[in-house]
Length: 257
Picture 1 (cartoon, rainbow, N blue to C red):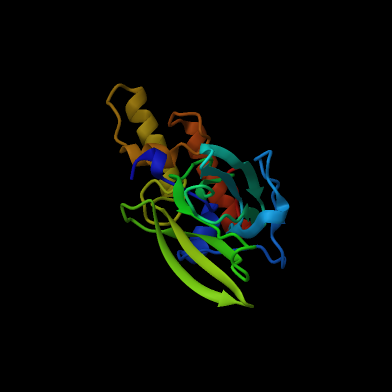
Picture 2 (cartoon, one colour):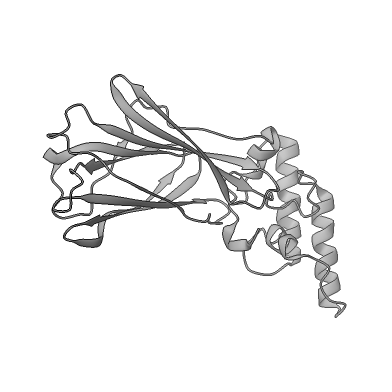
């Protein structure tokens, strides 16, 4: 997977503790309501919403644009959020009867990034429509997106599974989206653990490069070993890996910050 398509969205200690899909959605009953960017937004026409549920320590960059008979690409929502404890965000959507004279098609795009490791996912995109609530009584629709993280060596950036059902009389279109993580920061030898061996490999790479013998690391190892995000493999990275390992052994938790 290319660097710009890799997403690492959990601290390594969480991944090492589970090595499975991780979901930590908000515990509150109602998601955080987001204000629209569209200046002519009419709350009386709202007949649906988009809800995005995030895991812990994730940042969200979301954009919803609108195509209508008046033009294309109108900015409807354009927001960035941080989810420290796992949060849900709601975007209200106006309904329209889809005719040649009056229609609206919405285009949702979002990407997520890890607030600790600063790596960004590829964008997920989807288009949808919301029916006119006046002309279609009882046609409210919820589009829900549940973001999940999984460690895997697959080539795909993410996978989705869609289900449609009725909940309390409301139509729900629910998309489970799994973003794949193909490495753990600091795990240079790719054994799903962060140990003193990883620090030793970083020091060996630095020594080889510094003495003119060339690099021994792959592109992936360069990304994984650069734990201080300065673009280089140095003894400073080895020291941070050792400190991380020490914290894991003594306290059971650690952070790269």
